[in-house]
Length: 118
Image (tube, rainbow, N blue to C red):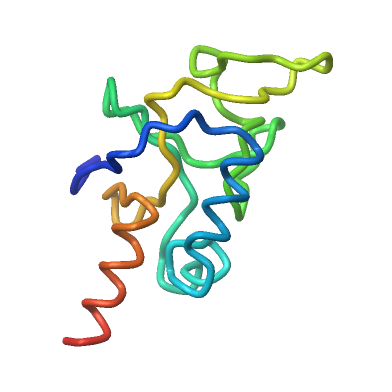
């Protein structure tokens, strides 16, 4: 998959940071609820390897939002009592895939803003 760049922030993702990102990008297409109809699929990218992972529930079904439970164990840094991932490697960022290209949340918001202008 192509990647038009990555976020510079390396804050370790967990449930709380995903909620903070949703607040930060509220009202933009950097949030799943606002970009779903534009072909964006919630995903994660490991910036160390360039590997992209679509967001899935723990059972492997595609998730309509960013969900940590479906990420592979090699990305998990902290487990809870129920073996549910609480946080993942700091090299992993949240974003979206559209037409086989990974977009960070910021890039998704910028891309759709530019599309509206043209």
